[in-house]
Length: 136
Ligand code: IDP
Ligand code: MG
Figure 1 (tube, protein in one colour):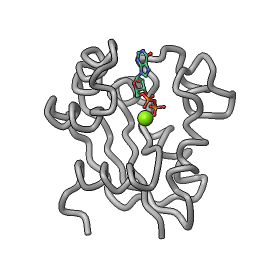
Figure 2 (cartoon, rainbow, N blue to C red):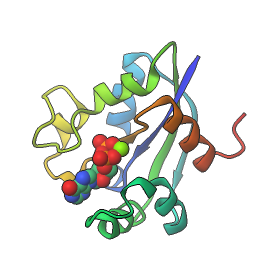
Figure 3 (cartoon, protein in one colour):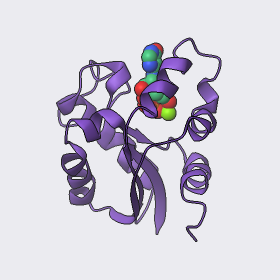
Figure 4 (cartoon, protein in one colour):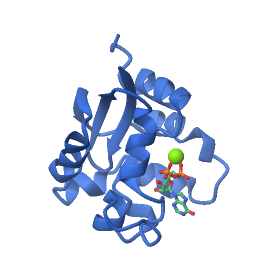
């Protein structure tokens, strides 16, 4: 089985959409391997979003992702799980995200786009280790 890492971001939990979002991922055929409601620390957020450290929105991004609890998920499916999740998520900017996707159906603003999903198998491995170091 193939695993990826997902975050229902603070806006999704605050809006009580964590069940809706997890339900969409489960209905697609993915299984929950690990789940935790956790307020992400600033240190972890800075490592997680390290690729964006030089972007003008980095400070706001770290403040946003740490502002209240997120639902952290490790999900498993038969193949290309990261891509399955990315397809269900929709485009980064919810304004551009297709109807039927999580961001397309549930969001409007780029800074409050509900969900993170690893963007490659390598990122999935790295992010699972960062957030769930004890997971075998
Ligand atoms: P992704 O979440 O679809 O993988 P990334 O490009 O990796 O998109 O960006 C990470 C997160 O940073 C996005 O989900 C979004 O919340 C935020 N972000 C990306 N680009 C911008 C921007 O131009 N302005 C503000 N926030 C942004
Ligand atoms: Mg990304």
